[in-house]
Image 1 (cartoon, rainbow, N blue to C red):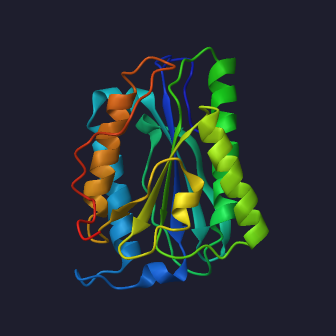
Image 2 (cartoon, rainbow, N blue to C red):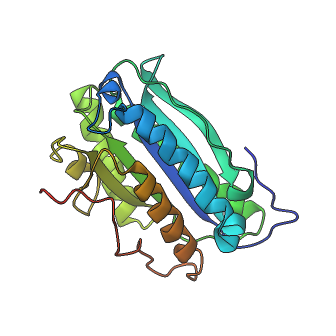
Image 3 (tube, rainbow, N blue to C red):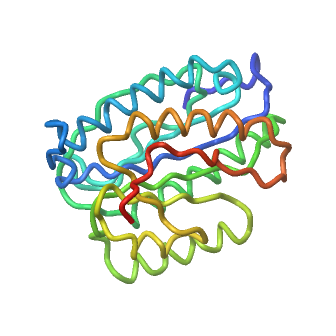
Length: 227
């Protein structure tokens, strides 16, 4: 965890990224690059966007969870980190899509973030969790059902806002089960646009007062326009 509550007492907006790193992310896109290559470029754009925004720089916290990857599991790759300390890193695709396990890690991270912020007397807005996947979860059905229910309850209790995002043509049916808002679809060649938009949205959210209902920006140039 790389946070500074002593020198930076600004209100925070915690955001968890749960990212698909399964083997299907090696699929080549119309750009000639794989989905994973473009996702990694998007993370670099995210770092640059956060660090170029003076508000986001001091008020946004990020953590990163992957599902799949070389170990074919759900892994915490980056614990809570203030935007000023965030440094992008390359993800490697492989394995299955244990999405329920990744969501469990994300929900636990949210609780940890709120506890740490409260203990240090730092105000915070409602945390966000962005879930991006290009394939069906390979998690056990019963685990998926219980985890989806946990997600819905956390949303109902105003503990987190969950934004499910389907990559390219992946069906949104499963993703719709984890949130109270319909899934959106991202064009696989527009990860850079997405992460720039996310940085802008987080920056706007940090200006909200704790307890207010804050939403991402309406302008989303990354959205898939086909469906």
